[in-house]
Each structure stands twice: as C-alpha cells, then as structure tokens.
Image: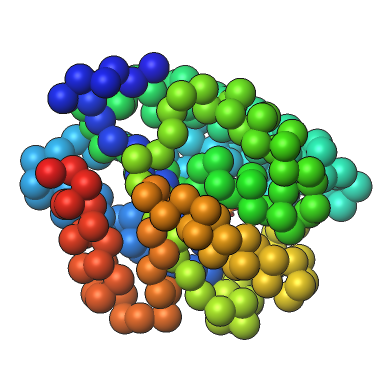
Length: 215
Ligand code: TYD
C-alpha cells in the first residue's frame, strides 16, 4: 500500500467515453511531469499487466462476448484492476512515482453500474475490494458530447468496432451522464475538462491543476 510520507507518489486517473482523447492527454501530461523531474508510470485498464491483457481480450474481443452478462463483465474488469494495483500501481506509488492510469475504478461505477444498471452498492463494494486503499488523488474526466464520441469511434482507422464500441447512443449517453454525476458527487477528486476544446488548451488546464495538486 502507498505510504503516507511526503515522498509518497500520486495516482491520477483519466476517464471519459471512447474517443474522448484520453491517450493524447496522458502522453502530454507524462511529458510535462518527466520534464519536471518526476518518475512517471503510465498504465491502462483493462490491461497494464499480462493477466490484465488476457482479461481484456476476454471482455473486449471474445467472439462469445455477446453472451457475457453484466455481472461477469464487472468481475472481470475488477479482477484486472486488482492485479494492476498490486503489480504496478502500489509499488510505483511507494517509490514516489506519479502513476497515470488510463481508466480506473470509476469506469466500473459508470459503465457497469450506471450504463449496465447493476446495483450501485455491490459495484462500489467490489471496486473497493479490488483497489484496497489505492484511491486516485485526482481523476480527470474528459467530457465530449455523445455524438462526438460515437463519430470518433467510427472514424478510427482500426478495423471493426469491439464489443464495447458496438453499444448504442443510449448506452453512451448514460456513460457521459454518469461521469458528470460522479464529478458532482466527488468535486474534490474529480475534475471535468471539456474535450471539445483544442488539445493545447485541454493540456494547459490539466497541467495547471496537476501542478497545484503536486505542489
Ligand atoms: P479500450 O479499448 O481500452 O478503450 P478506451 O480506449 O476507450 O479506454 O476498452 C476499454 C473498454 O472497456 C471501454 O469501452 C470502457 C470499458 N470499461 C468498462 O466498461 N468498465 C471498466 O471498468 C473499464 C476499465 C473499462
């Protein structure tokens, strides 16, 4: 578990729907932090470990995926999370690194809890069991209108949309609204950035906030 000493690292999670531009902003923030002399560890969910990548394939690319029930989906995502926390995130925080996570526990709260309608109590309890006390110091939600997000998914050069990307507009509207709701519920931890702004401006807003938090 991360120590509470002055040299303890920081965990920053990035959230938002598909096509919100998370990966571009993670790369930019990593560059700022490295320039400032911080060790940066970037990881992604589901994945970030070998076990997690295998779980990701089951969830996202499995040909039998359409038969997967929401409960199984939740348990698989959180299993991948439990692994990345213990294998990558907690050790990096103990070293004093800044960990940038492309998705974290809020993805389960929003996608499985809100969009797939699983009861919030069990989702929260399972999430907490998976992460222990490794909670994000800051969560950055990159918010884009649902239509923009769907259009970006379809524009992507990669081949066919995966299982999650085949969901409809109602699902993605719930995802978007879910994140905005979370930000209202946890204003100290969750920052929302308008993902339709030019990339440089988003970058500046995020870097300003991170500098404030890191001191
Ligand atoms: P990925 O291809 O990594 O998408 P992205 O680039 O948008 O992050 O696939 C992750 C998909 O899994 C994405 O649709 C969000 C979804 N997801 C959940 O539904 N619950 C979760 O807990 C996590 C981590 C991801």
